[in-house]
Image (cartoon, rainbow, N blue to C red; front, side, top):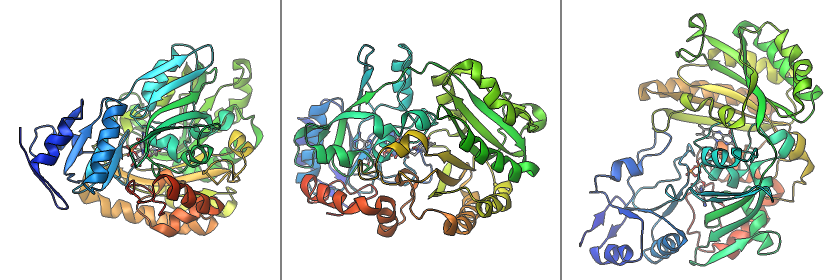
Length: 466
Ligand SMILES: Cc1cc2nc3c(=O)[nH]c(=O)nc-3n(C[C@H](O)[C@H](O)[C@H](O)COP(=O)(O)OP(=O)(O)OC[C@H]3O[C@@H](n4cnc5c(N)ncnc54)[C@H](O)[C@@H]3O)c2cc1C
């Protein structure tokens, strides 16, 4: 069938699209197709972009064809994994989207404790496949995120004991801008392997990732919530907890509005609270002692208990529905959760505006610190924490008010931060912020970009310019 696709940026003629169609087993979705609107939408409801063509790949051959097509037609190329990046880099106006969302298989080798994961899998897919063998890979805290999380680093419940998600990458297969498929690991293309561990989607389309797994099955985890009036002391308690507990005790701090769902006591719903979310993977008989200070601090809700890791990894998914909320984020690394920083949190945190808006402080200590800053592209190996302040609400009319809260809060905290931000929490904030994220590793990333993507075909990302 002859078709043409015209968008803001490019016009593709029917001959080009027919030629593409002859090489693709998956779906080719054009602006007039019924599936187009669903296919162009991403996690952040604020993003409303109109690509010229979306190729929903089924296999590596489709990815190679799509990359060659994008290069030859000189289109902007986006790569769509889990679609969660709040910038909306997974889609663009007028270009090509290489959509991996149908490439989600996970193979587990329980003997070797490794998993081979397709590039479009979500962390929920990985949890599901690995948990059957009592194993897990370090993921984030929401199960619908995709492999873009690992390519930028990957901070979550298992970070302290087992490192970033990218620290557990053993090997990756990647389709480069010239359409060739290469393997990156310590023995093959080690410079590319270095760049993939933190450098984001800059180097090509990752079609499969081999991950190191760990024996994590049932954990002691969940949230413990405190009255908002006690937030200053709760932050001090969080700081002391992270300094005094072993690495297999991980936790993050949060300001939040208690969701209006039956899982929470009625009196708490819609109340502003603060809390600590725990994930303990150590010997269960020691959990009670470690949790005692948190439990003695007067919680309004204590939901910490034994549960399968995939349940903890997906516990808060309902607060972050895909495509429903309008998001705006700002973040930074922190060397020290100082009294001055706690003062700022105590001033802005209780004003958390609406919906699923929140402020989280994650630990980036433990195993993260044991990797040297120049061993992977992810550079902030010395920071103890990352904070992210985000607004997320259903009504776009609320966004300006929420965005102002995020900006004011962030601006007050930024002078107390380590300087750069975790790349996966950045919005479209410009080159300076990207450089500040990679620090001394930036020049080596540029060298890798020159080698593997010299024309910057993959530029819909926190871009390293060749
Ligand atoms: C609700 C929510 C919760 C989050 N929680 C965490 C968390 O706990 N920990 C954490 O570290 N981060 C977290 N993040 C941030 C997350 O790591 C980033 O948004 C990340 O980019 C998401 O990857 P994705 O594949 O889902 O998204 P996408 O938007 O599909 O991808 C983001 C970018 O990654 C690249 N990319 C993705 N897949 C591939 C691939 N296979 N090959 C090549 N490039 C690819 C592309 O450049 C793409 O533009 C969260 C984000 C959201 C929205």
